[in-house]
Image (cartoon, rainbow, N blue to C red; front, top):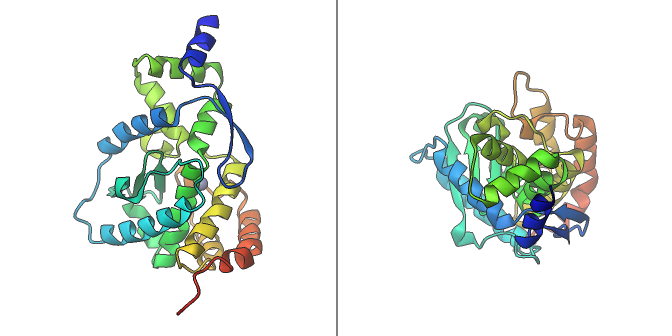
Amino acid sequence: MRFLVLSLVALGLVACQNAPVTGRSQFIMVNESEVASMSSGEFSKMKKLPNDARLAKIKEIGLKIVASARRDDRSGVLPPAAKWEFAIIDDKSPNAFAMPGGRIGFNSGMFQYAPTDDDVAVILGHEVSHVICRHGAERISQGLGVAMVAAITDEATKNKSSQTRATWMAAVGVGAQVGILLPFSRSHESEADHLGLMFMARAGYNPEAAPAFWARFAKIGGSRPPEFLSTHPADATRIKQLQAWLPEAKAQMPSKP
Ligand SMILES: [Zn+2]
């Protein structure tokens, strides 16, 4: 155990930080670049649809969201626009994700719930917010206990077991792809909803699409990946919060010429 703690300190992985934008204090003991490089490997393995005509739209909207989020990114968490990769994932479950290091995946099964650009902006705004707030790294650090610390040390020594990889990916919100169900916490979801709404509005999309999207999404049955489960936060609370934040979001919208 002492060896474990010493190695973490030696690697400079132990740190208390403040969440970008909100300033909420966070306990993060993993290196963001470590999470990013792990994500990169997993992203490259996903089955993508590179010739899907809708990819250009995802990229266009994603880049606008990233640009508006970067204006708040004083800690430099988000890579510059040119570094971001976008993909449509060949997966019928309604999910989307943004990974640390600048990778955005949008499942083919998500399009039917996101018919307009505003809807896509709601989803990508929410996902980019998880990244700017380092929720993935925070979850790895917070909730997963000694086993996870061991796994991080394991990772630091480059012994990557598939179990370790799966846990890391679940922590950055790609649980469905790797078979671990691990939804973001309620506070992470609220933080991502709030910031996502500001980012989409600032990028010129209509924030009123957000409460409408989540209300619609709450009604669908069947199995959903953890990131888009209705329970975090509870649907009614989430929609009420989004509506309460609308005036703040609208004030961020670029004025029409
Ligand atoms: Zn989320």
